[in-house]
Image (cartoon, rainbow, N blue to C red):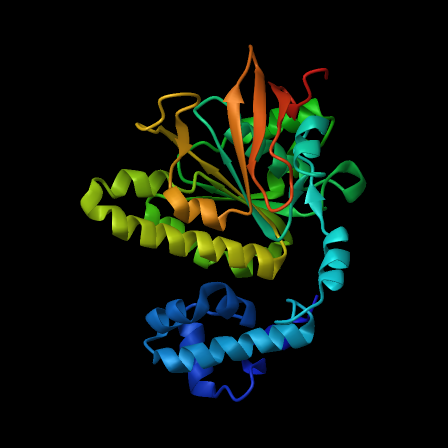
Length: 324
């Protein structure tokens, strides 16, 4: 990883002290922040002209390419293949679930998990927050987690019970999770915009948003507000995508479901957020009930995974295989 001096705003070519000060006052602390937020956000936050912001962000991208933090604009498929083979993953807690994901939840990607209440979405998030802290040989990344809680679903007691059931240090598991409670959609967006420095300073490897769409559904009611809601949600999801890629973290978002009135046969459940969430999520997983504590996870959308289902269960240890 590049050292802090090379990622400082002053490292951008031809940036002046006045512009650097203006960016810092608007909350941009490093070159990575510029890349994650993009020129539109930079213009809105600083009041600078759009053309100037586009130029600054382009120079920021070139600087990160020179440092090897991000890929160059044109790379060979062979290079990408080799890089992906070295990619890092976080165990979801059970062999079946990990197999569905091709080895675990992938870094530099956004994984969306949706389903009705009680299907295990939040349990999966809690399990990942514990397991990301383990060494790689134990299915983790020896990193910490950020949990953005929008529905008051985070429970430290559950972290303790999962850790103890897995024979881990519960105090260390709690200390390795940073919780940010979002009270509305604007606050939720602000938290994500300020996440970059927190990731760098705390060795974060997992960012959880539980759930991504809840506040938008509650605040933007009726068809008259649909356009504004989707624009705001689109911006939020794209920041998550850039955050995952730039900081090389795994991003997991949960989503609610709604019934589709035009579905006369089969499962009428559809994830909320429409095409905005569908197109920005790298992987989409649908959780549904089976018998007792057993649940079904279905890979609905992926660039390369097959669309199939696996069985898992909810246990004291969080997500687990049905046979153990």
